[in-house]
Image (cartoon, rainbow, N blue to C red):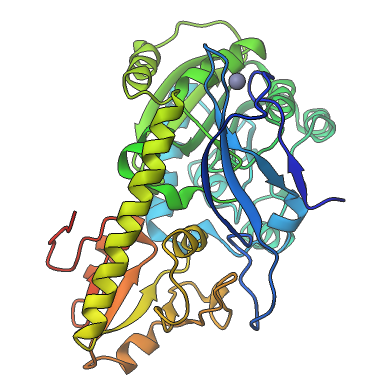
Length: 416
Ligand SMILES: [Zn+2]
């Protein structure tokens, strides 16, 4: 199998996209390619294409890295983060209310990770659940928590098999995976055949409008092959014979949308048209927007490097806090390496003892922070979506905190 496949058509509408690259970030290794010792790591291009079709405008990666390369050793488990558990608890309650789910219902989660979301359904009496998760190690964690899980990617054969064994699903969910799927038509068609006639598909995905507005460029990495806005999705599901009938903005990952899609025709919430209008007003489907986006990244990186140099001059040393996948894009785009960042503290034990992809900075436990307490250390919070929680959790630390994306510091002094 080749490691990289060039995209020539839009994943949502099939229009030719060759020659429509609107943003090129530096090539990087796989964002989750943490290694147990420094070694040569292959880098892959990180270019974005914008679909030129007037009713679409879908943004996607120009080169798709083979999923088996990206996901086999995936080291991320959502249950390790308390805020995700709370988020999914709320999510399950809303879905149970909306669809009137009970112990006779059947809920399938695509990309079910360690079973955190499905566990929330089970705990609320919706016991007919099934997870689909390609990473075996994480699927085993889900199984041990009483969430039946198939180790696979979703396709039509698996959808048929699940429907034969358990009946049609009342609800199919997919959170933070719809951006990861290369063949969205195949995935949507599998979801459609798994759902009953009144079934609903709910998915959450990072929202392109938030990425552009907040300059969240580090959420662009190879696992995210698609950057979703509402307008292209409305047209896509219509073409798939489904109805995108509601959408809401949620705060996950710096800004996401929770999209509701039905297998039948039904009344569409005015929220859908409102968001499409705001996307067009924000010029999300114009190449110019992404040229400016690239400019903003360069300017921000320059400012960060100036601040690092100034602090170093005053005797400060640097570490990182949090080793999320998005760290890789940020380090390469801002040209940070092991000379800048000495070590990275990570709360989750899964990545400790490993080295960051390509830049090979050691990932260590929180005890290291206590060790350097009293020295002049500045921590760059790469897990910026948890910035406040992380800072609040280490109130007694003597160092300086900085959000490498917004350049905000501990004292709240944003430098722009
Ligand atoms: Zn398109």
